Image (tube, rainbow, N blue to C red; front, side):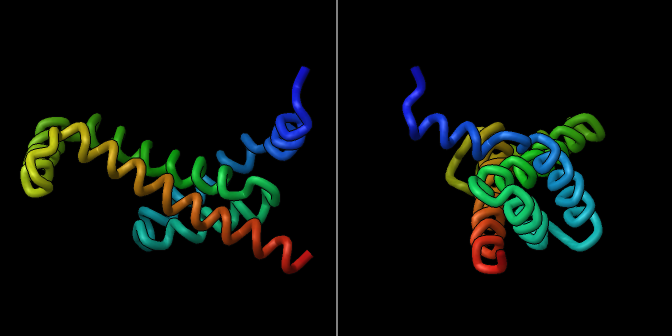
Amino acid sequence: MKSRRMKRLCRAQRGMLPKVLCGGAAALVIHLVIGWAWTLAAGVGAGFWQGRCGWLAGAGSVGLSFSLLIAYNFVAAPVPVGRMGAVMGGIMGGLPPAAVFVLTGLIGLLIGAVGGGLGAAARQIIT
């Protein structure tokens, strides 16, 4: 038997996948055209569209786009990207190259979560 809180959480997450995919596509386009810092806007849009648990939709959408770009870089140029990870890991205190790319993905998740939270809050204020 599910608790009341779990039922409420499951209701809030219903229908989130299309919002995450659309937000991810928007974040990818924004990232490539304007720059990574503006992907916050895609998180805001996904969070506004989702409403409750908007931070989760924002984190999923921007995190998805960051992950896709990291994967594309590895497919397009694996050796230079590996070297870049090794150099950046050395600059960050001897981190392994994989940790650099995991941190990049986590930064994307954080940007999206903040944007999604802002979008959900804006929706509550406006509507």
